[in-house]
Image 1 (cartoon, rainbow, N blue to C red):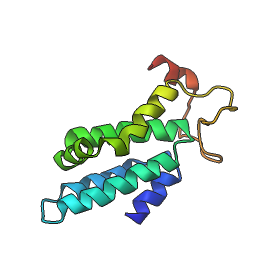
Image 2: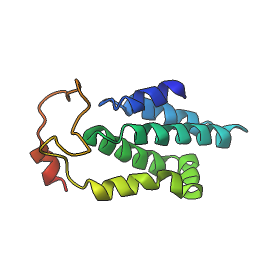
Image 3: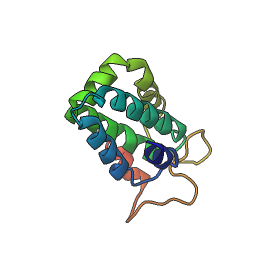
Length: 129
């Protein structure tokens, strides 16, 4: 859990492997599934909120969380039972519907020192909204 939290908190641009780990751990059908899902999702959401000052990693993390919820009944049930813990995601999406363009606001496009693989421009993000 700590490894996943640390990676997401660092606002890494390649969070998919960590979300896969959460998906696998939350889908193991045993007597600990509910407790494990609780620990994993609380840590994941806390880490995502910690990294929410960076637009692209946060938007990708929210998208991955949505996919995780759609595909994993344990995650879906947990989110349905704990809506307040994920509500900050809804508020973040309302506050930041578009990527920052000037670099002067409270949310930056990327964490310092991180750049995406390949070409990236904010115009492509703007078209998708």
